[in-house]
Image (cartoon, rainbow, N blue to C red; front, side):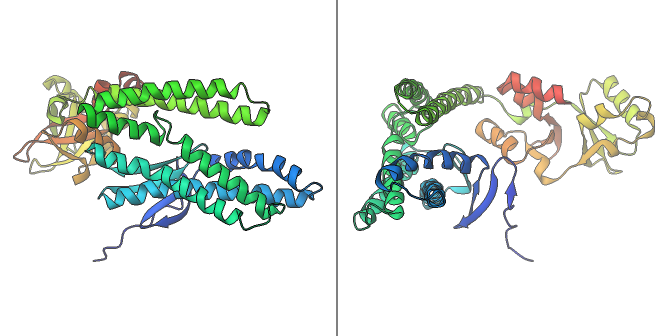
Length: 383
């Protein structure tokens, strides 16, 4: 039997186009990233006008394209720095994605110690600094009054500036994660450390926004303001996620499981629903002739079946086969329960006890309702 892993998709919804893979880690570039890169590269035009007066328009296009590509390459190398260090620390790195303003390295599980969090966080800014130093060294031996000289000068400046800026002590910047690791190490409390780093992120965003208003050029002011907005909203998201995670302790699949009624999968849906109502069960499990669970009724599919059709369709026809992916131990709780939704997304799960026998059905909307009531209402509204 082949042990080869399935190839990563060329285009991934929510991520963009896969441009390469490094050490098995796919690198995706979103459609917004090139647009932002071109906006950043426009700053090289003013330098070219000063150093290379009369430069043909076609050469200016080449100059802007070269800086934009170099900027995107810097973002990718920055994120790969995080990814490779995370791999070195035995994390499972899923992907690298480059968005408009920055990138994101997805890896599991989350850092368990301040030290590992620090190493993964600080690696990215060091990559920027290294790229900036290399570009500066090459620039020193290339004539400054050439297109290549302008490109190198711009990339050296951008990377050195990003290396410094990225170390600003506020989430979601790498410096914010470094601060989070430091406070975590000092207090032993990761939640408090995250809250401190997020609030500092608001301060950094506010200061950046104020600075943007003092800039003379519209383009630079707009980009800086957009960056400040992104920082502020990301810091808010960090606090929001912290609030959700604070509700995890005490939750388990067993405590959230709905009472489920086992019914033969060949029984008409209308009759199965009648039996469930009579038994006070809020979920249905389709069983075979031996009474073994074979499928879970999909609530959305059942709701979408018109009442006049329910006597003519079977329970199995609106159910999803029970696979290992849909089985969850009743004792599963906390972060592991949250990871269930992220790694094995489904609307219902079969909850089994220590003896392997079914104890109920976990509806994803019930877990989301305990963690984020607003998100649960949106889920219910789509059913």
